[in-house]
Length: 237
Image (cartoon, rainbow, N blue to C red):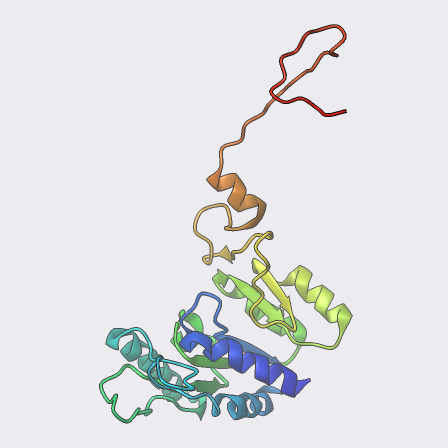
């Protein structure tokens, strides 16, 4: 469902201006759907209202500082120089009255080569890169060859393919038609590979294990008939 996927991809890529650990930075478009998907995502992204965070109706604020903005713009510039298609360009966005703000509009870059920094680096900005794969097998190789493995998601109507992806994708959190697959707190939250610091995740059983010290209590209570036990409470008949 292209429309369903595009709406969720836009929200996941540009929410919080892309400055969150689970922002969606890369889409692997399979079987030639890249250009059509890019246009669908563009339709949603163009509706996002960018401006100062306290403004009425604002949906996306600036990036954190000038250094971050310059870095993000340099990645977009590089991808363009490599022949990528800038489907939606947020580099020239100016907010009236806030000309000195560190604002970038949602940006979509299609057909990005795998050696481009825009694909390889953690952007942490409102930039979505789209890379192309002819087959699922090629796509899963692209996913698994990344040095990062925080989360990975698939959009599909095929339950068998979804099951295969959940088993084969090398990431700590997997989404099936869910672009930001962060689980509820009683499951572990965290990635694999360079997306994990240390050897345990937050939340869930691993978080409890890390932050607590276990205590084992072994007790035995002989019957009241054979032993006069002192009880701190009395049962009512």
